[in-house]
View (spheres, helix red, strand yellow):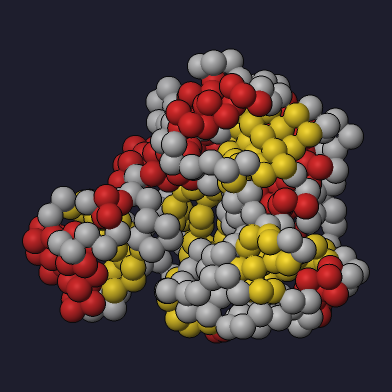
Length: 429
């Protein structure tokens, strides 16, 4: 097999690394890739927003399978463009990708299908209408921009002043671009978050191991939200009773609902959950794998990922093929100074060779580029130091051991990834 992976982050590096282990794989391209992926695949320049350009790339390479990592090409219809040409691809349709591309579309779907989610106060196309509606909400209130906003489109407002400020910045000052043209208001859910992901060929599906990520930039869940500062996976996150509850009340109704509404869904579906006192509820859908959850997930895979995804694209997914290593895994993200705000790039990274020598550790690159034999920063989230072991404590110890060997000016990371892994506060436990 010759495989094309679309994307440039830690998620894509993790996929490339795992795909490369398959005896079925002869060649991997990654477009556009990054400084770490270059060591494991041929990287090709591309614009992720340019679906015609991606189609041209597919015509030139003729891959046996294409796997799309990030949301933008999915929302723009890359899955449809490849499938209409008969090219095998792991990607939901453009319509299905609206589950992530439009928060309002997703909320309306959840309500139609009777799937547990937060109460919605309303959806709004003008700032004045949204501000007027604040008089009827309970505080704090969640404000969501409808479209793609690079992880910056959700805000928890503690009071009316904070809510009005966010609404005006998004809708009047256009700070989030076209993604903020519409907003919705919904209740704030309390509990522990859980990332529940499945793979599906449109008819059959298989769930992946459970993961939990850490969105806030600083320890103890302080500071602004990020794309994710770390994640961990352990089966203890999902007791059997809770897993059955999620499958019965959320995953199965979602799959049935997609089918009943004539929505083709082939690929990864990420269900972001809040485990509330009254049961699990859907916070959001993503139409792709999470990042950095993917890094923790691939570290526990005990199956041929290339074979499984090829069968998925051919609509012959066999869920029993997905087997998992026992124990736990964790990923600690190292970020640039200033992230998730403004940050500098082009800073040399030292210590990677020593860090890679730590037993059981794999370093996935997210925001890096390579120049000669050196690696430099090129993004906000720079590296995902990932480890798997027989316990979450052992996985964390080796991951942080490796983190301690890496150095670049301004680097920062959370020191409490998986600190509460033993504390299960989950409805259904």
